[in-house]
Length: 116
Image 1 (tube, helix red, strand yellow):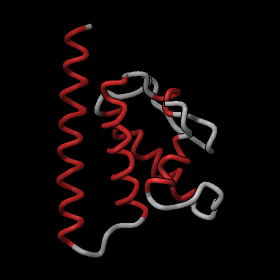
Image 2 (cartoon, rainbow, N blue to C red):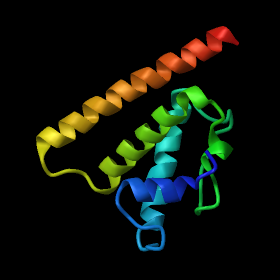
Image 3 (cartoon, rainbow, N blue to C red):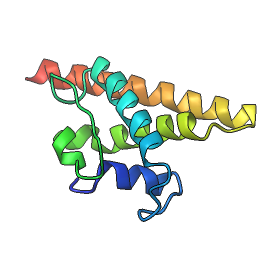
């Protein structure tokens, strides 16, 4: 969880850490996804954003039960925003996975709130 948010998302979408050509584009998309996750009840109460590769996942989320789901959601959402697939079947499959991940994030968040 101490991996850079920007670096990990770049790696997942196939961009090497040393290639900074698209950092601003990816940062904008990451921050947009943070807004969506905030609306789903994930992350700090006052929201969250990044401006470079210094913020790590543990700065954003400390819930180990949600961590991998949130990371997968971030990756898929940023990938669709940054480099959308031209094949409609692939795009639909990605959207279906995002819907499921949103549902699971929401379910886990509600379950955590009822426990606490």
